[in-house]
Image 1: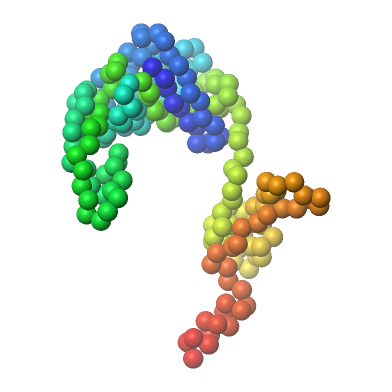
Image 2: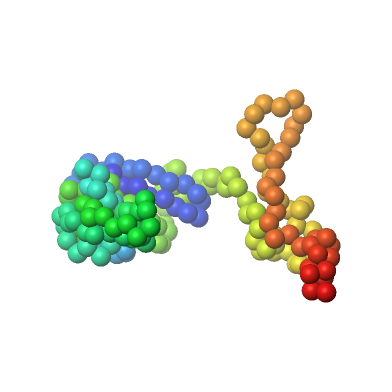
Length: 193
């Protein structure tokens, strides 16, 4: 079985193949959204607690929260349900999904960190991946850099270099949304009058 483990704090993700069936016994018979101690996976996992967030079986059918079974079930799914995207308004469809209880027939199990352990896991908790994109909305930029409303947001926009090769060193910046400028305030005053 493969384990897909992201760590949102660093932005890293790791895909681990576990061949030893005994290491996975701690996850068997557990439901989705259950918190499990990951000590059985090895020495470096001591102290880590993970939450089961989903998975796929060997034929690719996804696990669905609420289907209390090991096997596969046919459910009538509509808009708003996981595992289904309607093509037309009001469309419903009967789809095969896997139950929310973990067993040996899964090929991939998705886990999310709840509690960090004692040691760092190489490639997951020891390195950080910088975010590609910063916030676009003015209020979110203020919040990210803990600025006051009087500060100029345009100086703090996260810029990135363009993909294509250029002679001059250039950077691209997104258009700031909901930016309060004197012109915006003037338009607002004119609308009120």
